[in-house]
Amino acid sequence: MKEHYFDKLLNIKTEGDQRGFNSSLHYHRYEPTPYGALAELFHSYEVKSTDSFVDFGCGKGRLNFYVHHFFQASATGIEMNEEFYREAVKNRDSYFKKKSRYRERLQFLCCLAEEYEIQPADNRFYLFNPFSVQVFMKVVQNILKSVEEFQRNVELILYYPADDYVFYLEESTSFTLKKEVRLEGVYEHNPYEKFMIYQLSY
Image 1: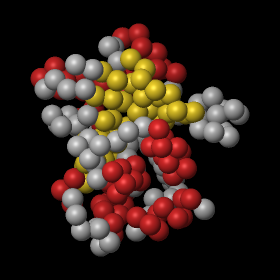
Image 2: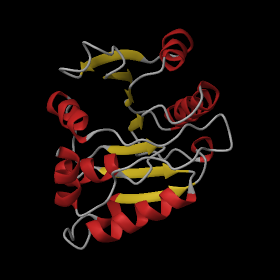
Image 3: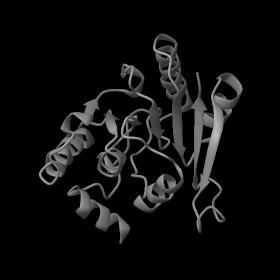
Image 4: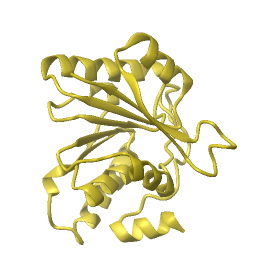
């Protein structure tokens, strides 16, 4: 019910998952974050209009449209799959038929996550297990390099966090756990049904 309601509200189509599989074992199949989970996250996680989100493995753009609509935050979706990228761009066109403001704050790029050049304004990074820990490490290193060049506070938001992601962050980086949001009603049956938010402060 919630999936259809929010897609209709935002005038987009993000339901369904990936048909087939990626040729590379480093990139996982697409599955959108449930709207119910996003609502629970943002009920307890503050977002400002000055925040700039990057969603690695954005698929059809659900997270991007959500933070843009409800918080007027900037959002960049990174997607390697050309079909999903085209659907995200199509969703963007449809979304802005109902919403005319802040068009410049919402964009999608078709490229590999590790090839995306982190921008100085980017400060919130979202991941729903889109790729292997090897790619994750490269992405995190790109973020850390950007922070060295343009010092700012940044946060990583992990949904359904992979153990190797968490181990790498906690053992090999300066990121620290800021908040854990457990999804009521499902976490009790599956301890991965949660968000883990890591911060790097200057």
